[in-house]
Image (cartoon, rainbow, N blue to C red; front, side, top):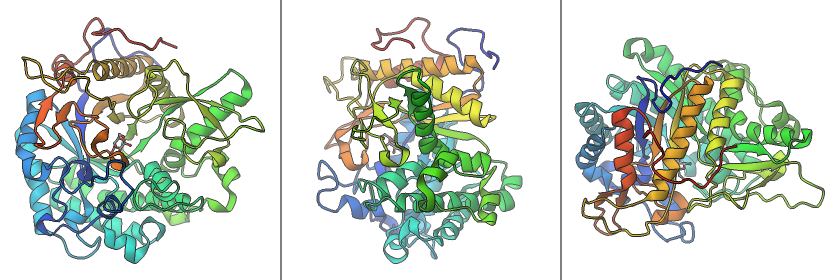
Length: 484
Ligand code: GAL
């Protein structure tokens, strides 16, 4: 792979700089304008599911503050904004009638973005499934959902495709499957060792049909692109042994390969087929046909890194080492962290070189023409939530995290990786799923009661990066993690 950069800290001229959010996490207005309930409304209202006892009923109240929020983005010089549509806000029961208010709301948001020169990147599904589809049809376990999703996607392309040119079908189907149907810590709260693979299969099938609809009926006249975004942490072999290197590859195949292999190679990774046997569904010929080659870009959400090694006979397989372990028994890989690694408030290890290596692995294995980091960022508590004289809250650890990870992205581009854009998670603090608002990922702080948005230093720092299309010439801060 040949280097594409001359200036050591500058990014390519057409690099996309963005920030991201999702509907359930910021909108609130959970019963406004005829919106149907989602599985997250039901889950958050179930006692004991959210650590803080909160719900997303109000969240950041973005539904009522969209114009201020767009002005805040413009203030940062944001070029692109990734957000999601709430399926039950657009189609309250998940099939049939379309809500006029849902269409109005997202139209207004899209128009406001475009008026400020901000490109909308829309995710069709960021986990808030219409509740009716869950209780009446078993959610993602029912094969029929693929057609329902394609119908919903069709509605979105029809109403918004004149202005939206960047579509993401699904956000992190790994999380939907593992957290929602395996560990039960996300909606719909199912606990199973079989269902994650069925749900994932139907998520892939739904994606295939939605993309087929777009390509068949809209893409030529609307001229947009469509893809999926998958999450993956890096898995570094604990030692250089053949076994540990194989363990790391297996872990990556169970994580990213689960979804990216069908999209790019038309089949699940061999190790998954071997380890899972009957529990892994097989692709019918028509599904495979629609799924293989069904992405115009490679969307990646990346946060952290763990070591992978072959488990010893008496090792307990910890399925939740600092989050994101997955169903460890199935992959038969031991995951560990280096005690010296910094960790975010989520407990996720801060390892920027893992980001560079993962990007290289993706380029090598799938050879995509364009990769976009659709989410990267960090949760940290505010040491002092009071803004200084300049109205900004200091968040040095988040600035360091972003600077290091963007540095790793820059290096990856230098390595020859086709990285074309980066979206910071998140524009503002929001409802962090089962953690409620206890985890703060925002470039902007959101005050608990007033919901006022206050910029953190990271927002200013990121605005400078965008403005100069590059990282500051010398690192702003001392970083804790050495290069590897
Ligand atoms: C991702 C997810 C986002 C956000 C982020 C931080 O998995 O897509 O919604 O929650 O993690 O945890």
